[in-house]
Length: 241
Length: 255
Image 1 (tube, rainbow over the protein chains, first blue to last red):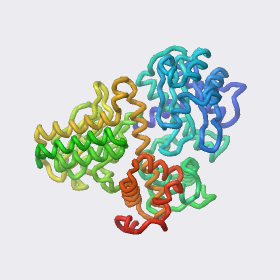
Image 2 (image 1 turned 120 degrees about the vertical axis):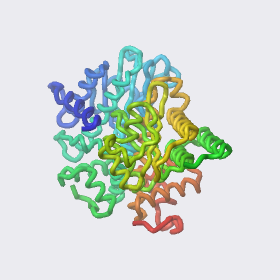
Image 3 (image 1 turned 90 degrees about the vertical axis):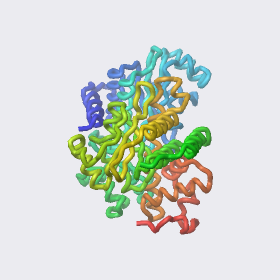
Image 4 (image 1 turned 180 degrees about the vertical axis):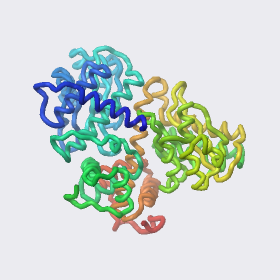
């Protein structure tokens, strides 16, 4: 096994071990709420939140480790500025170890979250290439950098959250992941995503969903299915799964 | 192996430096570094790999970008010179692949089968951190002159600086932002190759040539155009609308 599988598997085990809460929402949203709590416990952090973002709709905070984290998270959408929006726009992590330093970058945001006790914010895009699903935000009540290990952990939580979101779109109510496939990074997989987008006339995010769903239903590896698509021996039609 | 005359070497670094200050595109920049590295030591193939947050090496750019030629890098997921170089933070040089089966039982025979005889790998280092490696493969066994090794290591260092950028290097620990961004840029390029291949009914390799030609003609950055193609192909009609583009743009008929 590669370290990749191990890291994601460890995160998955942490989420599964996290207790459900009576107030958790059903299906994948509830699962993401547990993921946020597991991430907050593991990193550790005072708050973790996941916001779904796309070109078509307003940002939607889907899950958070606590009610307070929802408040903190939603502030940046009210104010229209902040690290989460920046991470989504630039497609890269935005690490703010000390809010006092960014006062000039996002004056309204920095002041507002400071009042809520936040001192450091770290935003990780849930993305794969041009397909982006949203951002996972980590909040702390003391200033300071994330260690290398904490960074790896946060990136892995964001990666697993994205995989759960992608798979849930095809199989609602069911959170089940083939992690080995989730981390297959051969170029054919990405090329097949682009080809499927055009074949099916969908956006790239949906193409990711369809590719994984097809491999799952066909009980084949993602890499094998991707290779057939790139070779032209497999063409998916609308309705195939 | 061929030595590079000093004046050519100077040109190499001038060109690399120019790219850094100009409209900077990380994938194009790294590709140029690999082309120069392969020329310096007359290697058949040079590639540059960066480690993701799972410490897994991902190919960023190669001197020969055809899919078939990239397999030598992607076959190093579990073992290989690039892995060793990355994990130890030290160059791996002058390895005769035909005698390396003990060291890399899976990788070495495969490389020999592909016609490679020699391999070198140079770490991409920032102080204590290693972010990836520059990997060179040759058709013939041969020792690298110390001066050539220094030149290739210098190219690897310049590539590191280019990726991380001065800003990040000064801030010290923010390597992650730049690395994640660079790794994601390469994924976008692959997605765009797939989308365009489907639209233009050509191979992904030919699609890549189309994208690069378009970028050169229109003075646009590779990452920016790839993102546009992968997000909304219709937003780049000159490239994605097959009927408006002359067939001369297709280097060779697609698969």
